[in-house]
Length: 629
Image 1 (cartoon, one colour):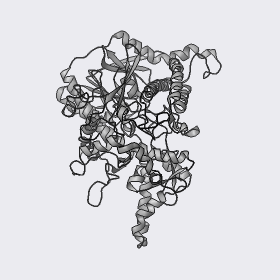
Image 2: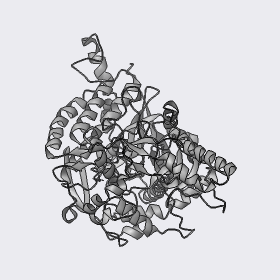
Image 3: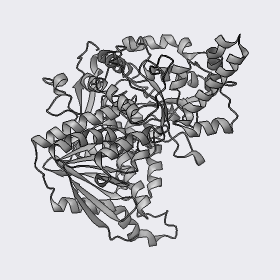
Image 4: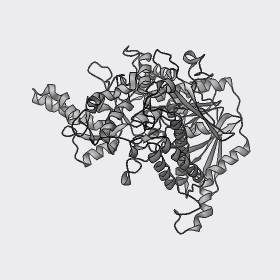
């Protein structure tokens, strides 16, 4: 691998990092305000925007639409739903701010050409209270096209992987990364930076192995870059102990939402027992959260996992029963019955073809006809996200009208505790259940706030040249390590001087799976296992400095693993600090198995200090703004 990397410098006003839904929302909003004020907006994406991010493969539903204009729900309704689903720990101000703006993003999608299902009355077809059905295979393509048109191709850099924040006196002044296609290092200098690089996959050992390795529910190319970027900048983080473990169709990770909400299906164990009924008394242990309806997602997981551990598995989605029930009223008319059955069959397959094609392939390969037989469902491995049913991310300021006068506000909405660094989507913590539409709306909120910051702080702070050179040298270090040591052994993948990216990833996943509550131990952990994990982490962090790369592809993989490592360590520290079990079904502390409202109805926040290389972990209060404790 030639080491002659070219350095490309780009100076801009607002730098948006990422190409997913949050960044696309930020691009549209930032472009609108920037043009009015003569500002330049630049976007850099690791991938290609039309298929970048969690929505890249498509979706079968928009999971957040409040319907404020229709009068069906209120912002307070949504805050209550989110708060209870997260067992009482969520930021009311951030959730409410997204809820009051999200409908306009959905209307934008429809205007841009996204097909939303319409009923006979001309209204949207709801999958559930908050969800709208869509024909969404090209969902991200449509949203990305609008973002590209708003910014202009000349302001977009694709296939450039951002590795490090650029800092000056505690302020974020840009970012540095490298092209995954050319020998180029990019140095972006900016007056404000908006981080929206997705959540984290690959920290825990996946349940898919062999030819299925890398198959996951959340996109495998989301590797912790948002968490790494904000932590390395010195930003305060929150909810790093909260991981998400979805229940999905087994092996191909197909979605279950449409089956539960649209088809009204049941899930049972192998004996045909509905564990949501047979184990309902288990919910009494969790007080008002166990009594909430809908039942929090983690508690639904918990009940199913109890059946599995008792040997009552596998678990099944009763698809044939659901389809039969929906078609039952047409039984007296054979022609209408046949037509309805065909319609339901098409909807069942479209749910996968819109967003999880592998599940349709697996059904076809294993002769699963959903109208004839049930299909297995199972818990996945854990993920770190803040757009779905997880909360891990940066601690950001709320909007002034909701948050002023509280610890939740410090000047600019969506700004982290680091000046000039904003966050959206999976990069922000404590505001879950925003999904694709809410993430787009949050990107718009963050972009407008960042433009306001720039107009009020309109000077470009230059990073020290020596700092930039040090970051550049660190970026290519894995290539240099390989070049310096590759001749020591006959097999370049076995060498005492370095570790290859895939080998490092396997070690990280094994450690996290066995000691920090992965799928293979039924998400169980305790003080002893966490202490052992901390011991092994010392060796793993040492070896992370010796990851080698043979080419640009492996350089990408090397840095993805460096980013994952920070997400893993922050999780280990946070889950050790919280001495209770608040989210059974996501993880279970066997030594502290109960909910402790008196001591732990709070946020667990943390910060890495760039000056001392030390971590601090501490509590922050949960503020009730809407009568939802």
